[in-house]
Length: 434
Ligand code: UGA
Image 1 (tube, rainbow, N blue to C red):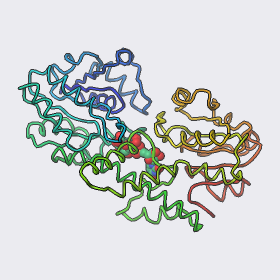
Image 2 (image 1 turned 90 degrees about the vertical axis):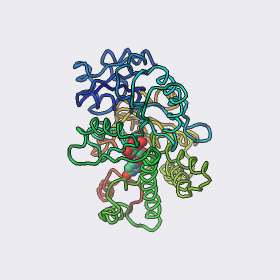
Image 3 (image 1 turned 180 degrees about the horizontal axis):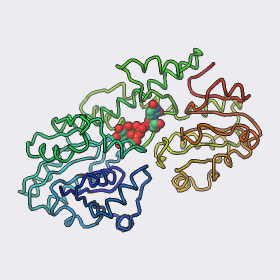
Image 4 (image 1 turned 30 degrees about the vertical axis):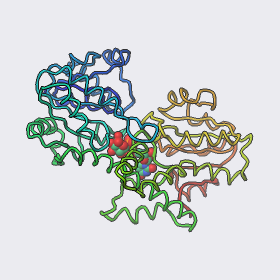
């Protein structure tokens, strides 16, 4: 099939590359000339494990190409994917101007039937708005389909190639047939392609992310309670997660959810409910608890140092909002750094992939290390904000030698409590006690 993908951000690039991998001819289009030129030369603009291999393979096999020329990209395409940003506006509602703008541009260029697929996360009713743009500008037949993405950063290729489910929102038989053909290679193991109306599909995306954010937040509250009653959240997690109705995944307490999706989507769903005069109370609680959870580690640090961090120096391991990504958007580490600095402390940070992004954001407000051990030099304590594998089994003796002390505040529960006691460390993690 011939496919065009508008927008080569994270979702667009993964979608375009993975669609090319099953033999489709994919042209990705973006307004950013420099980025397009780089991609034409095989330079991938994002860090995503495994994507680079597929990216280069499909470029060299000429199934994947990049352009700034929208007319050329969509001319022969049967399906046009829109993977454009929907940033939160000042009031938290999703800004649809990129999507509606692209729809208007496409509507003025097409001369034959197209399936317009919306991959971006958009409020309920957006498909109708996109349809209205086409109706206003062209007599050419189009079907507007909602097809939300469920990719996790870090495992996006696997999520795309072997999805738990594909959700397709359309009532058009013609569009359903094309979309079924397109996705058939990805659901060979028997996972479903779920067809529904556009609005239900749009809401499915928000409901999935909001539910997962709620699940995490619930566990964070259980963890906080565990600390007060001297229970162990790891045991509780296993105790409840073994019940199939609850499930083992997304029950890990930590420093609150971050990233570019959960915070934005929970807020947008809450706003969307408000617009329909519905008070979605649980989401408000989720947002409030999550904000607090992001700095729970600093509360522990403040308590340990009796409220005075002036002149103290901290090592910080982990900046990305989660492992296997360089993405620092809404990362708990940012909130931690901010509060440490506000309290007069200094920070040296290390992250396996997030260093460039953090340097761009914070400049010389903090110090940067070349590796995790270098970050420990002269630190009064180590704080851990991301559960990168490389932090899981460090050389504790070497750490003590460099730091000159044995104090760790761990926001990701990486180490065994008994082991840390045996090693003589002061070790404070989330929701655990011996
Ligand atoms: C999330 C969803 O998982 C994807 O299905 C969805 O497609 C994507 O948003 C999106 O809307 O684009 P992502 O933001 O990449 O994916 O990251 P997750 O792996 O879901 O983690 C989100 C946050 O929750 C991270 O800050 C992570 O540290 C936190 N988390 C996750 C926990 O604190 N505990 C857990 O048990 C799991």
